[in-house]
Length: 411
Image (cartoon, rainbow, N blue to C red; front, side):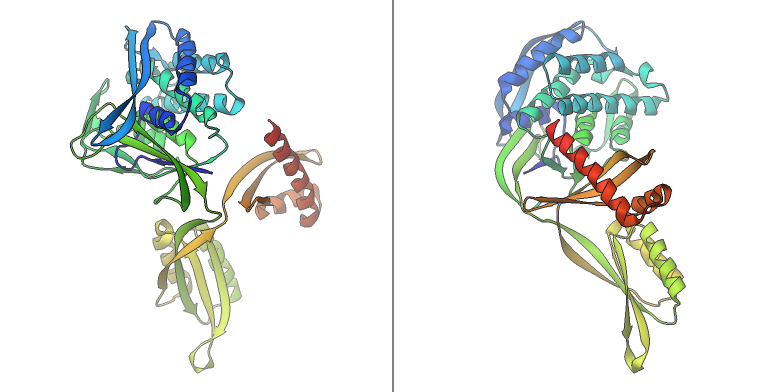
């Protein structure tokens, strides 16, 4: 199964995501009751009414959050809201995965403010995010995700629209996206884009939830069979588009599809040492793979065909490296679509022969068969330290990883 989050047009906020999950099928009564149980953990804030109502946004029927609150507070310490979220997750007996998710969301929000203002996390004060709205969004979404069993599914996100123009808030006026949004998305796996809305389309709360939820960014919808769709409405209305977040759940085909660049060049009179060094340099520049083939060209001349698989963002640097290292006078560039067996990256701590190692491995799944492969660099390093062959080290590490996988499946 796969869940696609589509914030390409209207961006995302906490209430939009919450509503789209309820529209997708999450139990709204369970969510409302859980939020009401959480209310007591934030002082000076009372929820007078909470419900979900069908509305139309530019002709699109979607679900909107109805929230009426009574609170006389304009700022709160970030840790106060974090403690309320952590205590709420315990109170309503969320699973371990759900608790970690909820805490990660608020941690991301606090950390972004800490970095922007150059202050310790314990000194962070929220202004716009000080309302009980923040707790409602994070706890409500966490309950919904657990109710729909989405923590164990693949979640991808299309480019996130952040709007444009300027925004005015407690720290004055600044260009949009504001610093908090940029800080949250920095070093995340997600892609953002602006448009001419002249409004903030993605809120800090929505952003911090999204970066902790989505596993990867995609340019296009994956190849999938659509099974259910949720539409979550924002509070604002826009003239040119529906202020609605779409999420789509379905079964994904066995393969993923992406597009890569293929670079090829023929080089003559190059030593094996230079070619070996070339492979290392190109891989450091971000190539997906490098192959070198021996051949014969015109007039019976021996040649080496260098073939590189890369992406758009690494293309220029790799082309420069090919020219500078080989002296080639031309490089052929073509686009190629790839079918990819779904895989994920993992990092675990394993003790072996009195030493503790961080071991990286890729886990793949195809037609119900799951397999994994340990990074060779880790195997090489660990085998040298424990004084065993790479083959023997691989067997020992695989046994430990398999134990951890079984333990995780039962947790």
